[in-house]
Structure formats: C-alpha cells, structure tokens
Amino acid sequence: MNRNESSTDDLATPKPEEQGLGCCTPKAISLDDSKKKNPLPTNSCCGGNTDAKLPITKIVADETLAPVDLSQLNRELPVVVIGAGPVGLAAAANLVERKQNFIVLESGKRVAASMWQWRHVRLFTPWSFLMHPAGLRLLRSDRNWQEPDADRVPLAGDLIDHFLDPLSKHSDITPQIKLNHKVVSVSREGHDLMKDGQRNEAPFLLVVETPQGPQRFKARAVIDASGTWTTPNPLGAGGVLADGERRSRDKIQYGMPDIFGTDRERYAGKRVLVVGSGHSATGNVLGLVELATTTPDTSITWAIRRSDPTKLWGGGDADEIAERGALGSRVKNAVDDGKVTLLTGLSIAAVNPKDNGLEIVDVDGQTRAKVDEVIVASGARPDLSMLRELRLEFDPATEATKALGPLIDPNHHSCGSVLPHGAAELQQPERGFYLAGMKSYGRAPTFLLMTGYEQVRSIVAELAGDHEAARNVELQLPSTGVCSTDFAFAESVTPSA
Image (cartoon, rainbow, N blue to C red; front, top):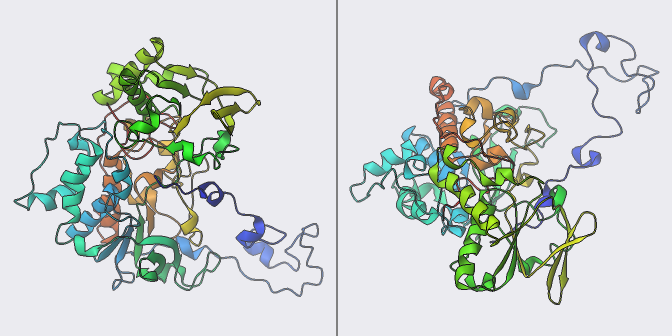
C-alpha cells in the first residue's frame, strides 16, 4: 500500500502568516461603530486610529453564504466527482439518472483502486447493504449482468468484480471516467481563499496531475468522494508519527495486509505486533492466529491504548450485523487461550530499529515489546491539502463536515444510530462543493456504504434542482452499540474471517 507519509504535515494547523493574518485577527465592527471616528481600540495590537484618516467600510453579510441556485449556475460546465470508489460511482449513477453532465477523476489506475488493495477482505455487511439503488437500476437494464444474492456477505473483491466494475463499464458512465488523474488542488477560478468578489458565481478550477502532464478542469460543482485510505493514522500516540516510524517503514504496514496471500511469507514465523482496537485490528489479529496454526513460530502481540479491553469484544449477539458481532467473541477466545498477548494502555512514542528487530517504546520511555513486523490498524484521516483554497468548515473533534460532526461523533453514536443526512447537512460556505463518503466523516469511523449512497443521492438531487428530493433523506441501517474511534478503517472494510 502506498502511504502518503506527509499526511501528518498536511493536517498541521497553518501559521497565522500562512493564513494571510497579520498581527491582529479580524475584529467585527458593528454598523454603529463604523460611524465613530475611531472604531479601532487604542490598545489594539495594530494600534489605534488616532488621526481617523483610515477609510471606514460598512461590514455586510458574507456573500458566500447567500442562497445560490446550484442547478442554474454555470450550467455549461460538468459536475466533477473526485474518486471512482463505491461512493464516487454511486454519484455518477445518480448523475446519469438526473441527466447531468459530469466527469469522474480517479487517481488510481483502475476504478475502486483503494478497495482493490484490500480485495482479500471479507466485508461484514451483505450485498443488500452494498449496492446502491441508482447503480442497481442501471445494471438491471443489462441482460448480461447477474445480480448477486442480497443476503450473502461478499469479499471486497466480489463487490468490485460483480458490481463496481460492471457499473463503471456502463455506456453512460465509462466515457466520463478519467483514470490516473490525481487532483492536487481545488479552488474558485480567479479567487484565492481570501478573495470575495463574485465567489459563489465563479466556476471551480481543479488542477490535476495526469500521465500527459498537469491539466485544468472547470466545474459547476464538485463532489469529493476520494476517501481516506491513502492517509492512515500513524503508529505514534497523539496522532503524530512515532520517532523512527519513517526509518522503519519497511517493517510496518498500514490497514489490512493480505496475510494468507501476498504477505504470507512476511508474517509467517515472525513476531508481529498489531496496533489498534477496531474491527480492522481485530481482523488482522484473527488472521495471524489462523496463520499460526500452520506456522507455530508465529508470535502475535496486540497493542491498544485503552486500559479496559471490554469494548474490544464488541456486541456479540446484540449486533444486528451477525458477521461483525462474531468478531469480538472469536478474538476474546484467542486472547483468553493465550494465542495472543494483549498489551493495554500502550501509547507508542518510538519504534527503534535493532539488529534483532524493532523495539516498541511507550511515552514513558519504557520498551514494551520487541517484534519483527508491525501492522498499524488505528484508523485514517482525510487529506485536506488539496482543498486549502476553499472556504470550508469542519467539526473540531472529528474533522468531519461541520454540521455532520455532532451526528456521527463515535463517543455518542454507533454505525447504525447515525441520523439520515444529505445535501443540507453536507453543504459548505463554498456553495457547490461537497465532501461525501468516508471523507465527509473525517476521522470518525462510524461510516457505512449505505450512508454514503444516500449522501450522494441527496447531493445530486440538489444539484439537479430537485430540492424536495434532496431534503427527503431516508436511511435504515443495522444498529450496533460497539463503534468507537478506530473501529472502521475504510468504508465497510472489516472482515468476518
């Protein structure tokens, strides 16, 4: 898996001078104040306006928040969808049904490029939760397409082979997909972050890296469904890289390695540390346990930051997704039977390469484990670097779209208790730009594919001018009380075997 090692830096808070701020942050001036001779306080860090020679300008409402009819704005330009994964292709199918002009920009060499990297993983939801209605309607018109059994639980590769690939090859979609097109920036044409002007009326401008060199695309609206797979959370505590993490990159994998396939020899007979307390980590642990049955020298250590492991065991029979509920019971048995060494309360500060492996050091400077390989399955975060010139608002805890954050906070919501939401909750001050899918959830792990499908259905309805359909969001999800901050690594990634 290719990991963007600069992701931590991309998410760092810009310095004041990088945000265009001088010695003072902006100070709101009321209309009454604007009539005064000296509206700036004398103790301001910029100094008082003692001679009153500075011009006074009325403060008006921010024009970027004014209502805009997105269906009529720049109608000659396409809607650009970033990402050809499950949610991006769902957006494309809805755009086809709404007869909207669109382009899909995919950075990978194929559709569902990120999912392709973990195609060996069995999902924990059946086909009925993995196929979106718009895509189904398009594919059912193809006599050669065989609809999967709605109650069967597929591998990620099955979802690609039997739904996403056929959908991407539909005659109304395949000409609009541009592979090997990596979006590096999204902005408003002629407007940087600070410029108001006619911002809402200006088209979006996307700078894209392609095999032919950089290209520019204009859009009337943008749906960013690029996901979070390429920016996994680091090994280190506090959301930052552990000391030595980059140096040890050849001994660290992120996400869900193919333990029984291409990565088998890498882990067989080795001392392996799995870091994370979510379903992805659980799946990795169970895979290694099974590997150890044929390669007894395989040693498995599981590190979690929490002190109480109770939540690791999940919802069991109470989980309405049976495959997911079984995970916790199986991994608890493995720990109880001594097949897995569980390290609780471990916050990693450093990983030190040694001749005989890697030393794992905690924040107190204590060596807690000595291993040969590390699998980091501690969640992911959105890459926001390409959006720096857009006016966006995020929830401070989750980095989700601001209005969505309180609805999906894993401290209060499980995967199934998230309320239905659509274009209204996902709109940004930058009208016409939407984050959708896993990226709209920021760092929150409570995302299921059906949630993303309903998001883009509502967004496309709004872009097509069907405001009533956009507002009528409906979603029925299986309930569970077991989600927490690192339970999901990407969409419906977690395995049952």
